[in-house]
Length: 149
Image (cartoon, rainbow, N blue to C red; front, side):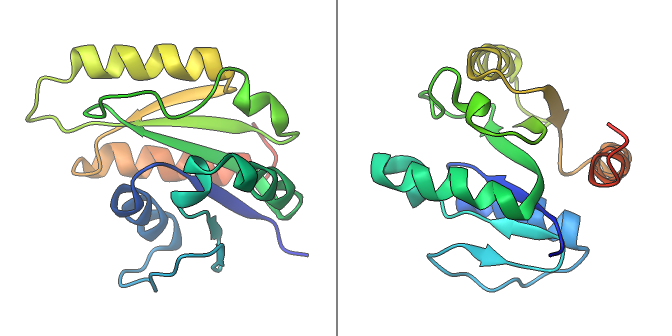
């Protein structure tokens, strides 16, 4: 079975931007269930809000090569529980989304703390409007997918 990158996060719009970047396409279908695409697995944000749905997120890892956990620097409350990333037996990457135009230092710091408590393997900051950062991100994701990281 083809391994994909599993993408989870609290905001479906931000998650869709990451998935569009990874897939190299736009106008992805919007559904309220797990969506398998060519390179990614999209987990609906509602799965993070329901304790009973966590088991579905965790069991989906068997079809994934890595897990991207997304947080926005502008969010106002914690999303992931402590040690959540330890439930996965594949690499976990915490992605902090921010915008260069906003003062996000406090938000980025809070996201870093949350990801450290969550125990992700790697923390990456990403401004989706910065093409150079997006290309570096894609390069890192390709190396993870190939098992080099």
